Length: 81
Image (tube, rainbow, N blue to C red):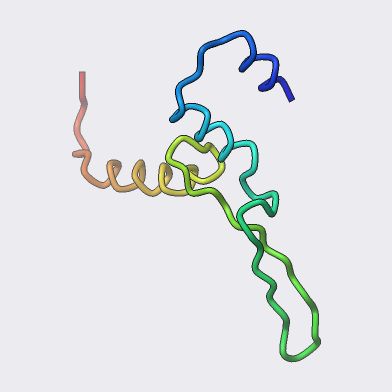
């Protein structure tokens, strides 16, 4: 909600504008939706597509956790300083 006033008072590059657009519209339906229907009961489930932008905190949470877990496996069980 604060982005329009921020954009009007700051110089923003096209890449920053694109990233802001992706982050603001992530999982809102702006990038499409997927509808799943249960074959047994007919229950419908709507899933909004994500932006998959590398700067988006919603899209990058799982890859970040995966990366951190992989780095934990690389650490030796020894004191570090």
